[in-house]
Amino acid sequence: MANPSLLILAGDGIGPEVMDEVKRIIGWFGDKRDLTFDVSEDLVGGAAYDAHGVPLHDDTMAKAQDVDAVLLGAVGGPKYDDLDFSVKPERGLLRLRKEMDLFANLRPAQCFDALADFSSLKKDVVAGLDIMIVRELTSGVYFGEPRGIHIEDNMRVGINTQRYTEAEIERAARAAFDLAMKRNKKVCSMEKANVMESGILWRDVVTEVHADYPEVELSHMYADNGAMQLVRAPKQFDVILTDNLFGDILSDCAAMLTGSLGMLPSASLGLPMANGRPKAMYEPVHGSAPDIAGQGKANPIACILSFAMALRYSFDEGSEADRLEAAIEKVLADGARTADLMGPEGGTPLSTTQMGDAILAALD
Ligand code: NAI
Ligand code: MG
Image (cartoon, rainbow, N blue to C red; front, side, top):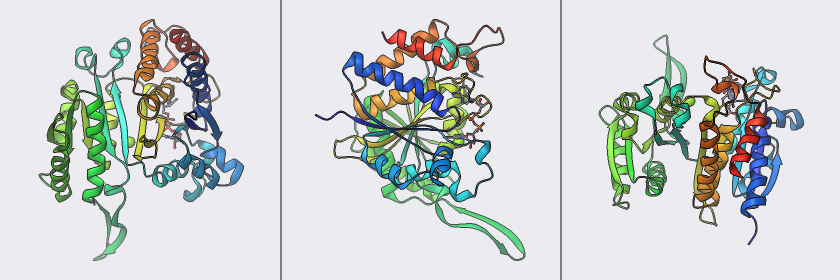
């Protein structure tokens, strides 16, 4: 059988720095676990703009459609801030998400014991936390028509429309239930069915899809209550399913329960491909961090955990992902810290490469 294929788009700023560590990890899996990937690399964001005048070349887009998974670093930077909107680095990312039709955005919020002190919440509220937010990513109020700003009765009016078809809700719900089957078989769906018709439809369709997943426990919650519960008692949740807008906010909120931006991975999944796996792109939540780029200070863990998600959802049933996550857990428990993970007590932080070294040593 052919090796699984991976397209690496490292991007800008710290993107290539953290991706260098991921490449070493990928090499380790080939050497030590007989899990060899056909890796190709290409440009995205500002790097693609510099080379081609566009943030994503058509050839790169075609490659992305053709591989088993895309691994992306980060895009953007001050150098590109004044570019026309149509060629901004972020547009490369948006094009990938849109053309690959990546409708389910998975954002885990997981608290590593060694970092529980980093949370803004009490340690016992977050210790052991491991939840997953599934955010619908390609529809809802960010895309609905009509939209725009126009004049009505001599006054400016701004319009965005929350619009969901049942097909869009159904496929996001299936992604959440499928995921729940691999976790603790619990889904909480969040909308505002009390004040929004799209929320009523959301609740109805999720309930209908649930009939195909009798083993999963389904609950519904208004999204505002969901926000409260997330900071009050986050461990009551396992998988949270929600729409694009609420998911944007709730996933940022949940993620911050657990510490640094340098630790947060994500996956964006689409429809199943011929191999039965979903079309997929994996990327850290953080951006290109121009303030620390080129200094070897970036924490590579968010990007490495994104690769762990790729192992889990695109390549393996999860045991190799467990292995990688356990190695990260171990180095953190042993006290390995990049600068973003240093408390006020100080000490000498590890560089990006040294953190990669530590994780490779723990894997061995
Ligand atoms: P950012 O996530 O790049 O940085 C925010 C803060 O977190 C900075 O102080 C940075 O040093 C720190 N940080 C981020 N990742 C880190 C890591 N791995 N290790 C240690 N510290 C880390 O967000 P910001 O500053 O708002 O945006 C910078 C650029 O990145 C902009 O051009 C923005 O458009 C772009 N961006 C790109 C994203 C993407 O590619 N998905 C997402 C967010 C922003
Ligand atoms: Mg957000």
